[in-house]
Length: 385
Image (cartoon, rainbow, N blue to C red; front, side, top):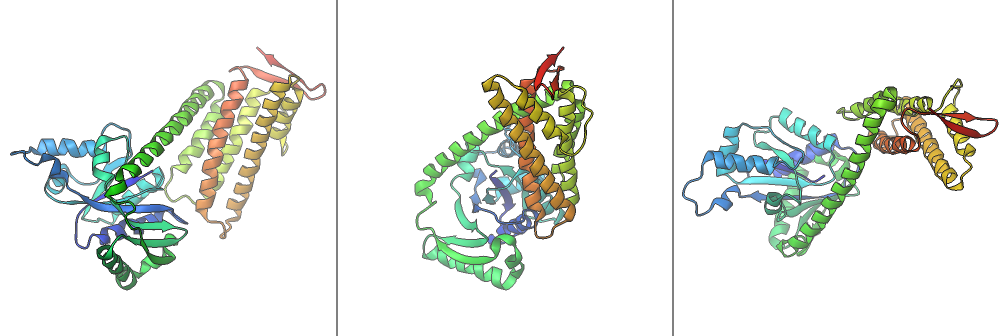
């Protein structure tokens, strides 16, 4: 997601950038790839020529920018009076970066609020499909570039270069802790020329717009599948649903550790175990590997070639989920310090998505509330009413 963090402007305003980047480093470990855009938001510009502007009108417009009924992630941490006084009558500084997920953003906001940054107003997820976001955020110029643990301070001409030198000097003399951040192991100045200036703002907006549309399409597709899985499991296997929701709840926890990772892995493994017991009749064997063996028997029992291919693909997916889950559980239980917890969490998110999609495939194959009996000797099966 692309997130815009808003502040009451101070001088020098790059200190506001540093306050956000510090919390990004605290929350999001490892490498980050993102341009960091910044600039001023003159909120009252749209009201130029009007003789009188009501506080109610200002507040409604501000709330629309933050929330706007578009379902975007957003939060304001100041009072309405502060919003009206600050946004309505002052320049607002915006620091915008991409590559943050929901958990990262909420955690960064929580830390900013806890640290009582008196200039911090709040944040909003930037949507290219939101008209006011197009107007307010897509003319910002990139100030930094983060890639492969290198923090680049950008400039486009001699005036900008002197500002870049000032920022680097500030970091080296007054903000040396910045060098300890994972994404800032090296520093450099980088000339962008005319890239990202107003001349190509329309092109950059079009790219962001297409990216946003693609993201929304994929989110909608997965949302439809997830809704279907939840509704189906609520009728077919409450135990499976309980374990699936338990894994998701743990992933929502801030500051996940190795213990949380092990709990997620156990819940995901139990998802397939419970669903296998629901699908197949008279399961008595629960020795290691029994889930894979049962699905292999099912795949081998199919006579129709097309169905057999489908079942083999399903079997391969189940085996891969189980193997990945077991490996990550093992790593988490060892508390291997060479493997960062963010890597474990990343793998579990991927496994969670694959598990949900596989459950959907299983539910598609079998009519709800029917079980399958596999004859391991004859490799035949039948649907039971």
